[in-house]
Amino acid sequence: MARKERPSGSPGRSGCGWCGIDAGKGHHWAAVVDEAGATLWSKKKDNDESALLTALGEILDLADEGHWAVDISGTSSAPLPALLAAHGQRAVHVPGRTVNRMSDAYRGEAKTDARDAYVIAGSACHRRDFAVIALARRRASVLWALLRDNRVFTSAPPVAQAA
Image (cartoon, rainbow, N blue to C red; front, side, top):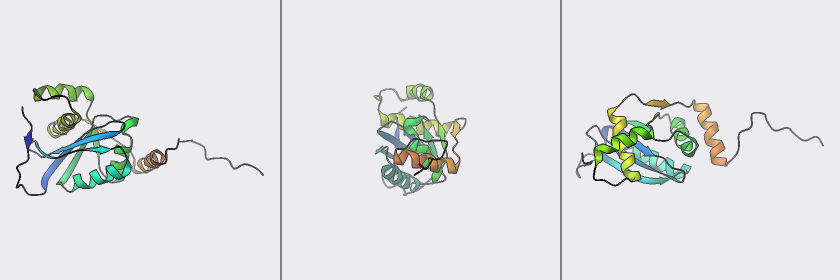
């Protein structure tokens, strides 16, 4: 099964877009596909707030309705779901095993971050049973602030030193 590219001359917005994100520590690769599986957008973005916000804006401009899927839900990708939640977006977790199995449908293509992102997006488009990465808006804001400021969470407030 070959990947479909969007025809050049297509209108700017699609009805619905699925964004698959191959998450990493230093960077993420994101690919957006439409209902037919055509690639609307595919780029590598650094794992920092400004790059992720730029990508978020570009992706949201592509479709009327967006669906997000990420292959890692651990600490290396924590800023991403926190940023999505802070902007009212919902993401699902596509397990690595699913990505590996679905990749078999794309024989002949070397394993790349771009292909994995495409497979994640396609999987989310075709299956609706992936677990939602749930973050309460307040928790997402706190998590993002801690990650952004490179601080460690402490459950007790700091104690003022007596003079």
